[in-house]
Length: 258
Ligand code: AMP
Ligand code: MG
Image (cartoon, rainbow, N blue to C red; front, side):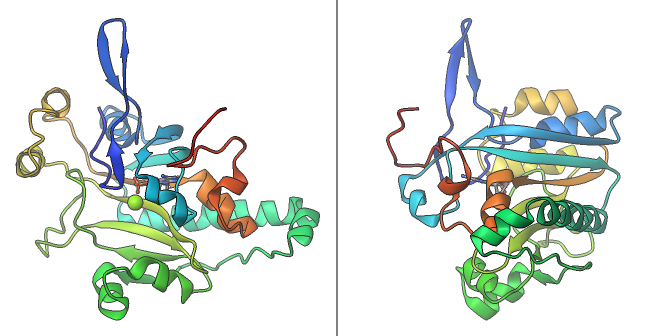
């Protein structure tokens, strides 16, 4: 099972194995939600993701068709808990890397800026008003530190704000300097009727029937997110294209030998 992650994917990869058809992993969102609903307090997975992105995506500098996502979920967390968790992780990991790799960063002529918490928070509506529909890179170019963006109408498992219908308790983290999206996540919907209604609206109720049967009456509140390892490395070292930070990169639209 996979969520309909987004429209930049040309098609979902599938394999046949022992007479069954399986979808290749695009995201472990449903697995994580299932795991925390079945007793795990916190989950983190370094998950290989295959997303058969459109060939035009090779020119963004941000897309591979095989990458590693750090996917995490925390039972009973709210979005603010996740913001603090990610900000602490950034400070700790980036601080460590900049100390250990001081010489390498010198060679690259790059200095990691360690941000202070809390990071700035915008809504997608603010940014759309200020920069237009393609706000991501423009907003990213205008900032010196990563920032949060709230409220996107997107996945069927995202929680709608009960106080403000039509608004969603989800978020992206965006890198500065034009590097764009770092992470996506959100608080999760637990009301199976709402999930079913949304799946119906997008014509996917049947595809997710087995999943719905599995989680019916079991979902608990949680929040989490996922970030691409290669995208983080690209930003840290200041690489122009994500290919530069992965050995044997798989870039959409390019012929792959190894
Ligand atoms: P998404 O579920 O699409 O928001 O993906 C979660 C995170 O994975 C993104 O915020 C990126 O950091 C990373 N990511 C998504 N798609 C790609 C891709 N095609 N190549 C590299 N990293 C990606
Ligand atoms: Mg995203």
